[in-house]
Length: 237
Image (cartoon, rainbow, N blue to C red; front, side):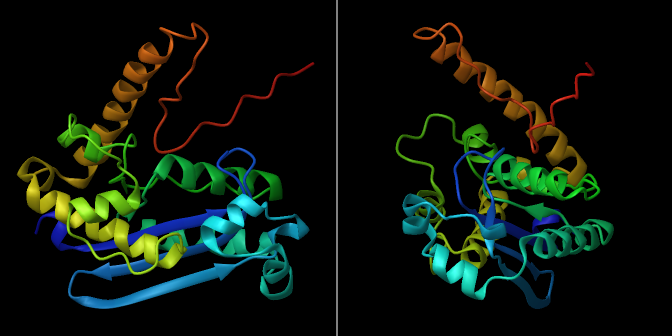
């Protein structure tokens, strides 16, 4: 059985900020689907550790500060549970699909660091997003946007409620399945081969984009690490 016919776990976060190093988790979803088994989803709404949700972020995902504080669970507890749920998925050998994996995994990693939790173990990750990674690699010169909504339209995938964590997680898995169906070279890879290839593709794409940006700004830097922005090494005084 090729990977795209087996079970996948979609993972998505909605947060307070586009910066993965400072964003706080507002909602999260891990949904397991496919492989001839029932769909199983786990969802979290957090209290954002008492922080404010900026109006711009609330406009995207629809969760206000008031709602999060009133109805959300303790963020520390949610992070612990999310890490535990993803660890179970990883130990089960199920690949994790994340639309913009570098962002979501980096946000979760920094939350784990804030609370002193053990970092998430290495996972086999599939990322249908661009520039992180597959869509840009298999269809480099297609014009137009490559947002989740645009990818769903391109691959004829239903997106029930964009920018809700559960809908986005399911959509990411559906896009990955469609990509594997449309591009046999993806389906022919083992999961380990696909993961390793995405690491290389992400680095290549980042280097190319950085070269482009440096034509105007010689100091421009585009992060090439995937699927996680590494933590900075502590510098002893």
